[in-house]
Length: 426
Image (cartoon, rainbow, N blue to C red; front, side):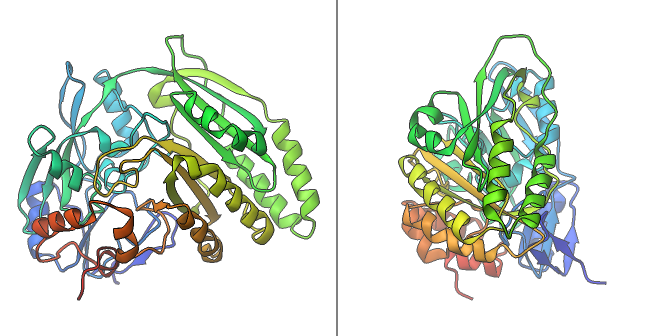
């Protein structure tokens, strides 16, 4: 039986010659030197692009996990790259620290979240990689290399968003903050009002995001702010039940879109507002069980409302089978060379498609809209861009490629897909 691997959604599959889970950095280095290439590393498999796919070797860092050390005064924590975000939250809470921000999924490994520029939302809050203080990698020769922000800032900026091609992360030190509480509120408003007041709404809170339900005319707005209040009960999650209802309406009333829209609008208008206070680790993440495929583009902040309006129009005119919400967030600018947020405040728009059916017609139709507004694709989510396209979007592209060649001169980490991203021949 051949080795088989697939990502979380089942869209990307691979049959590598070898799959292995090294116990430590030494064993990882040996595998990088001797395993059949190309060598790719997997975390939770939550990317929707073929970043992990290889006919050579796929390595899991699931055994290279946990806390290495921490500095209580400076709120630093050194952790192994295979540590999943869920356990990491509890580790940090136990030492009085918190991640400044998070996305809404906690199943990824921290190494994968860093490598793909995974992010939460907030105009002054950066993606996970902006927390990096030190980075340890295994390079293309299987050797350990260490870098720190104080002495190697350019290297940290070059390899902080690594796509598994600038060495394999083994340990990182994260610059955290003292543990904290958040007041989270949710309410529904018309999408027209949301788009009209986009800048005010998205910048008035520490963290703000919203979901637009296709064919509803409404957005669910989510605001999170620091709080010193006592904790209150977090309401039960209804996301999965809501998706089931939306899917049933799509299936049953595809022949009568006006009735479908009326029913969704009526349900949205009646959704109760939420308002609760919880410790940070009990706020960000949601349980995602229904599998989907996703495209997310990162646009200049001011272009967000215009692009979203076009995506909504496209969806509601041409793709009645789409029922997943669209997610809209903001991310602070940063200095990392391959970060989609490089030097610009960003509006991120994510569209989703049920994994049970082909997502590509929808994704292919939406992508030109994102690109027209100077969007940069999320590295772990569906896109069709190649090296020539990407070079135009990243001012430090050539510098980043030079660093990659230094770390991996024999292209041990370069699969055919990675070669197409980086413009590497043969």
